[in-house]
Amino acid sequence: MSERILTNGDPNMPTIIIQQRGRRWLVIILLLALGFSVLMNLGFMASFAEFAVDADQPTEKFHAGTRLAESKIARIQVGFTIMPPYTERIKKTIDHVREDDSVKGVLLVIDSPGGLVSGSHEIYHKLKLLSEKKPIYVQMKGIAASGGYYIAMSGGPEAPIYAEPTTWTGSIGVIIPRYNATELAEKVGVKSESLVTGPFKDSLNPFKNLDEQERAVWDAIIEDSFDRFLTVIDENRSNLDMEEIRELATGQVYTADQAVENGLVDEISFESDTTELLAKELGLDSYQVVNYSHPLSLSETLLGATTSLPKVEFDPVSSLIDLATPRAFYLFGLPHELNVSPSQMKP
Image (cartoon, rainbow, N blue to C red; front, side, top):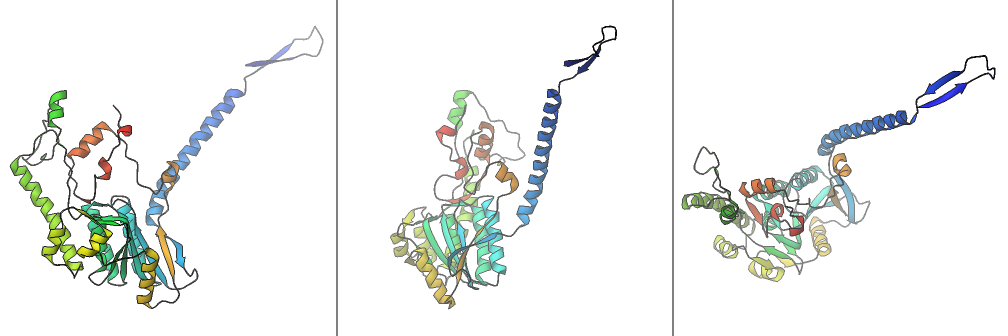
């Protein structure tokens, strides 16, 4: 608080003292109010943007060829572990390409170790619908294994599959991760006493052993996904019969040369050469190859999200729940969501 003294210089006249409150606190309060208002508005904008981005079509970007050519070759790239949110985004891209009459053919570029069984089949299904309207050529990059190989079947029996010299592919099989922590639980004094309505409700509980009946239940489930994988290959690789496919379906990953030798891949080729082969089949002298991407939502941008795979952070409670949650994968390697480095583990 500050004081201001008013006087006319006459000692016989009363002195007027005016007290003024400092303006500093008023400024601080106004700044706080402004900051709160900005944060609230950003929050509303982020919420709205979530809906807006979901409704938007994928963004198209020139990749190669003749920029102003009317005819297009769609370059659909599956370069991620097949899990949300990437599964939904690639499905939207496939739908968009299917309805775009300027797209004459599709180059499916795969660089993925696979992922969830459900997501792999959803992408495969969408691509099969696309292949009914437009030819698909498959180009494998560094890795196209398990679910990555599964979706490579989507072009149909007449669609060629190309791999680069250093491609790894195959890994045909299914995995449902399960970790047995019974000995650890005994050491730290933890017991599992889940309340369930049936004997199989918590059959993958990591704090109890898997008995023979439970194993039989899950064997039947995993065999169903495995048989679907084999059937997809059988329907789309006319050079292989089911017996040959079963011999290859050991979970082994194959080099590009081994894959060609075993009939899993047709030829060794680089992407630029594969694109020219597709253009030749389509009879295109002039064309542009286009990429597709989905813009980040405002909330993703504010949180510093990128288009790369999400970070895995270790949380003891959620990790325990994840261990008991059954997920079937067509995946080469450890499931991404359980791949936690020691530096990320906190006590």
